[in-house]
Length: 169
Image 1 (cartoon, helix red, strand yellow):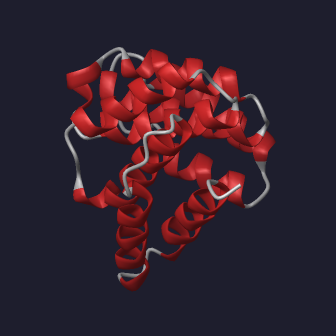
Image 2 (cartoon, rainbow, N blue to C red):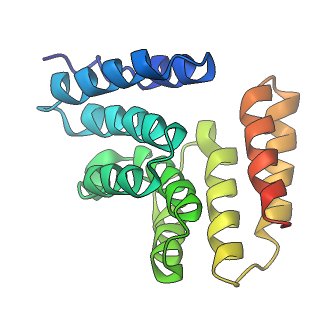
């Protein structure tokens, strides 16, 4: 076991490189290795959820994230990021509007870390749009994505813009 072996960033990088089989193996191992540490295990769950989403297993990704989110406040700012990822899984699974709304509310209530500002804003925007309650959150998310892009976080910005673009359809 190792509290620093969540491998979430590595798993996501492997997915972007088209190495989903290797990413799944690392994510599975990370879940096991971080079991004693709540926050590290939740981070590992984020990597596993990414694998599941890439493989089209949206409902399973939602279940993995729901399990990680049960620890709530113990996750600190990771809770809002995991909730934003859960919105992605629910949206892709065409999940029930009440679950999407709850996930969006959980993002809004959570402790926010400025490093995840854009991802959180996009999660809120998707939740609001999917439940028919949009009040301009998508425009706010676009501003956050533009700021991230200017700061050099191009991938975060591009992925977020792609997600927001899908809301138009």
